[in-house]
Length: 113
Image 1 (cartoon, one colour):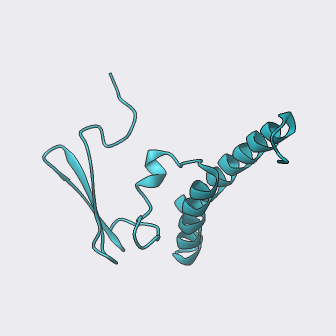
Image 2: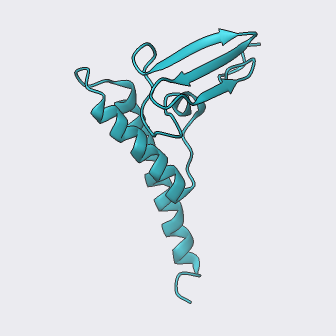
């Protein structure tokens, strides 16, 4: 029954912190297209999903919106995805697999009041 003491909690929090830092780093490479190639961005998208699944650390809503959950690629408006606003809802369509996501009136962003 190893790993049940105080030491294990410390390692768990360190792993979680490292996972959050890795997601931040990968999301910056997801935003920067590195010379127009999508391979780096697609690999970053897959790694963000894998880290989130393994460590329970989820990316923010602005990053989630840039990743297709079914084919696990980065979504670039006009190239491999379509972003439309209809009836106060944001509709994101992946042009690779056809998956559609709908976001509500505030689009998952900060509320400006």
